[in-house]
Length: 413
Image 1 (spheres, one colour):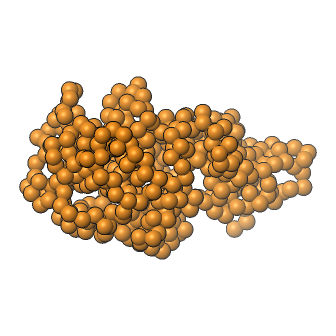
Image 2 (spheres, rainbow, N blue to C red):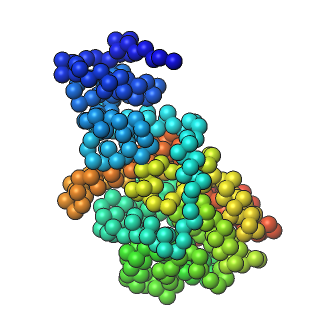
Image 3 (cartoon, rainbow, N blue to C red):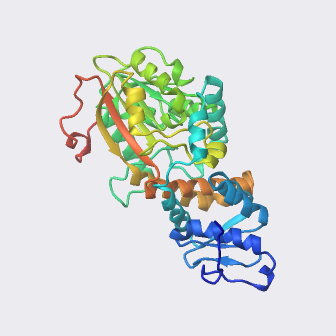
């Protein structure tokens, strides 16, 4: 069926420089029609404008960029923005949020289905390579924009006005209270980052922690910090994969690691929980990015930022991890808006540090991380992504009578 297109009816403006490029303008028109509900316009390199650009617009600098964006927007948007071949006019976060809202309830695409079908397990070598790609780019880089304790997971804001440092400290303690830690219990902290949670548990709750991670730089930093703070006798930082955890533990904690396990490797994590968690005293917590239905992460994020990552649904976690591990779900909480606020704070700090980032790396690196942080903020704001905390234990284990024991004011340590 032929398609007729009327530039004036579509809200397009033509410039003298744009005459003779009818195919470019037609393609730009088709692109703008797909994002029209977001009230975001499209502007071409020759001055041709499509749609209402008052709220913002995509600036496309060359014909190749236009074609790539039309053919595979899920991946090429990030590639083209990073290389400077497209830009955003208007409030950066507002435009991204408008575009993000278009995707929240869209059907899963054939490309996304193929990504789910062809996903491979994250083996030991693959997992280490993936973690090295993201986390071993320099502790000093993360120190530019994370909180003082280098907590790189969703914070918990007891008050809307809480600072990032206050909210991250509150999150660490919230995890400890949910787990009802008691002195001298043995804790496995799997995927421990720079060690903030393990050190908080040992310092304030008197537990003994074995903390596992395969990022060399994070483990080195955590060991140095533990020694400096006199906690090396209570916290052992181990550079090893979660699949190699051995022994028996009273508590199993995983904060921000499940996303890196991979969809085809959930059974490995279930086996570790079942093998290591004490059947009588045991309980655990999974803190992870999730979503309301199965689909892969954004293609550009999977390729450039978090290779091998997959964010699961609650149903997948229950059926593929906790049920095989013979664990009962005790509590579920969604901290989605807390993660949006966390990312807002990270992004604002990152933007202030961008000159230092560009000086150490380069302009494409700085643009990629700005897009990743802002895009993630929008994903949590719009509900494209969720942040779940799931507490689990054997079926006959009781942790709290009511949530008041976790959330009421006062020191629970």
